[in-house]
Image (cartoon, rainbow, N blue to C red; front, top):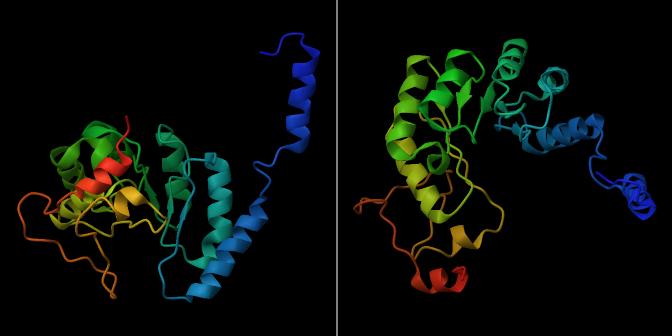
Length: 224
């Protein structure tokens, strides 16, 4: 609420007039996807992550516009709690719908799965309830002939746990491996997790997660 303060009203008008957010038009997004597809070639798997930003109607419109670029999936096209909306999108598009990383627990994913809101199931082991709950989610997905592609976008510990999780289920598809700079992923372990030249990761056979923290890195990034 801004009340009757003229300076506040003027300031808000300035923000509206000079806003830099949300200036990208749909045509620009489509052009970017087209450019990436050209660069990758026809065989590479290309996904689009919407981060829950679209309405169901706009997701359907954009999904159809992107169909020529043969997306492997569209991730989180609508809000996580808009299960009916996601089901509408999944039903309307040939491109698989993946999601939803912020959903919590078996019963949340039960709604997504049984109501046809997702084609690819994406629990996050740190948010969805740990190993046991994620394995239950994976079992439910398997019962509906769906693959699981866990979300993993945090520390090296979460990444290691997610690797063990996907290796333990019969319907694991792929695991994302973020390539943005992240000290808590790249520096936190004595032996960092590396991808082989063929895109695979060999799991350690050591007990537990098979990782050892670099105590120097822990101290370096420890919050007071």
